[in-house]
Amino acid sequence: MVGRDKPLTEGDILIEFQQVGSIIRVSAIDPRTNREVVIQGPASAGRAALARNALAKLNYVLRKAAE
Image 1 (tube, one colour):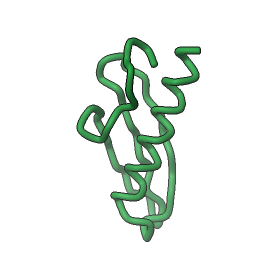
Image 2 (cartoon, one colour):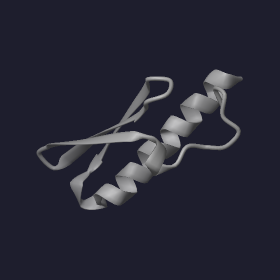
Image 3 (tube, rainbow, N blue to C red):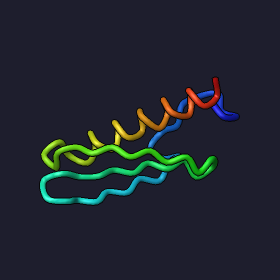
Image 4 (cartoon, helix red, strand yellow):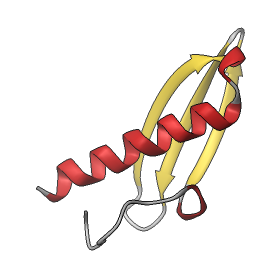
C-alpha cells in the first residue's frame, strides 16, 4: 500500500456518516493520501458494520493503487 506495510485501521482514517431516509452514506478518507471511498447501506445495519465495510473498501482501493 502506498508507503504502508499493513492495512489501515479505523483509528487511522476519517469516517463521515450521512443519513438519507433509510440509507446511510459512509465516506472513509485516508488523511495521508487524501484517497476517499464511499459506500451506502441500510441504517438498520448499524454504524459499526458500515464503518468496517468502508474501511475494507478503502484498504482494497489503496492496495490496488500500490500495484
